[in-house]
Image (cartoon, rainbow, N blue to C red; front, side, top):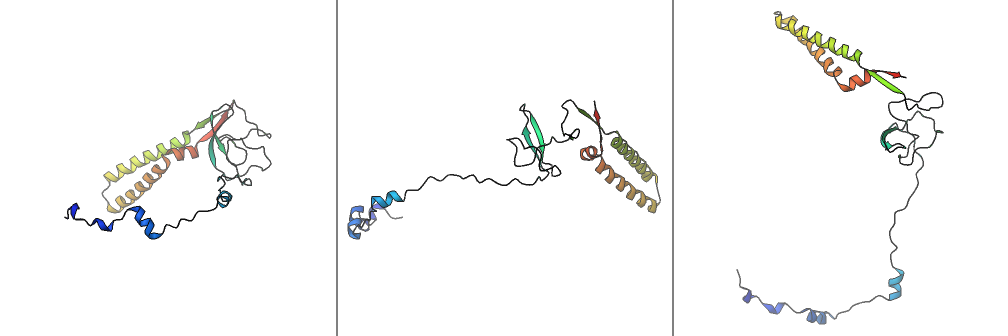
Length: 181
């Protein structure tokens, strides 16, 4: 390590000396050129888009009372329908998800109620569970290798079907909806 006192200070020149050596040639622009080149403030520009075709998407919004509401962009709806609410994205007239239009005018009754019934699906699932239990009992008591393989195959099929049907998605898709009132 070299001590600081041993550093050659002759190589470092003060700034004023360096300026004199290089001949300080500063070029200044005329004021009028500087004023003409002032930049305008950059601003966003709104370019309106043409209305797009309905795509069948859902989105959240608020109704007249400020309550949350689900809107649906129905691709099968006529293009000459009423206009969309101001807060909705570019889409056709929103339709509340899960409720169809009532009557030829398309008006909805605010007091209408619907009932969801999943009894049929529940019976299917219960039947599959009983079938699974029977196959497991038969499999445990069987001694023939060929029959054991056949029972294992049947049991795997029943378990796969039960796994598919014993879900909320399957229940919703296969439920029956009836209108009350």
